[in-house]
Length: 389
Ligand code: SF4
Image (cartoon, rainbow, N blue to C red; front, side):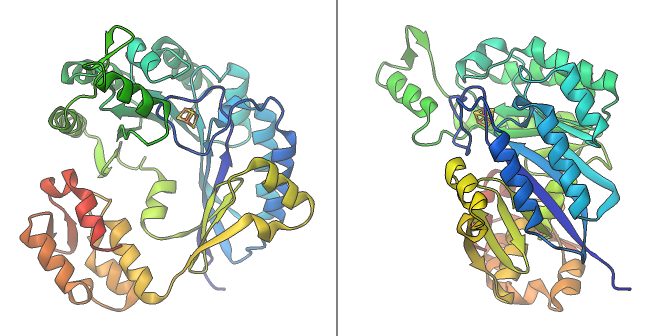
């Protein structure tokens, strides 16, 4: 019998209690009832018949999946199990936000097979949390973390943001002490990006017109140099403690690397369910439309294809380039052997010019079987990725 191909499933729950000031994700507030959306997702599940695949990871993201009734999450997972083959060790993650999660919800997640939580903390400093519009406090996060432990969740990620206005390197040092005391299996640390059109961008604009003051208080982004120091402090500290820095923004205890992420970076196939969810299947990348109303209406009318927008149909050349781009997010980079196995060609020859240029600029190195970022390349990764776009 042929070996089944691996598949990931992403489910997008685009509802949030309130919009964080820095957020430009597809997420909506003001939806108190979302049963129609959940029914639409279930119908979307039925449009797939992928018997040749085995699902090795499911990721429920948002938005704030923990904002909606946990009964909905349970019912989506039930439908997925009925429709797809799940591997015995399938990693099933849900993103949860302190301030929206209860003991009962966590118990339901556990009961329906969710085995990994990703908790959006962002910072331990209540002042900074308020400053970026988060709805919760550090104490609420601790409460969520403890409840999850009590219920038996062992595999938990904590999301952090660095480079928040007014945040200092000293803040980060204290923050990391608090986080490592909890010994989570996974930590993600993202640099704050100020996206156009967000409330944060407006606030920073206003502050820059008032000498860095907003409503009579200082409101300034840390310098780029300080932000990089924060990153390297976290990297060194977590590595010292035995965390595996496996991707630019991600650290894990050995064996607890996020399968959902790793599969994406290895160019494995996945389908996305719900508004704005992306899919990669049979060399085609497509994404769902962003409007909840249109998504639900199209599905109700049996016009599922109206929801899907083809982004790209890849030829072999596109696939090889993308494999490089994705692989160079990982700290181990690209294995030349794996590349040869997948494409029957040597990446060193195909990308001779790009790799020579990046090596001369000291952004990448070729270390035995691996093509990977140097420390300078980690800081300037965008320049590396650009070569393969
Ligand atoms: S919780 Fe996440 S998705 Fe929702 S508004 Fe905040 S950053 Fe955006």
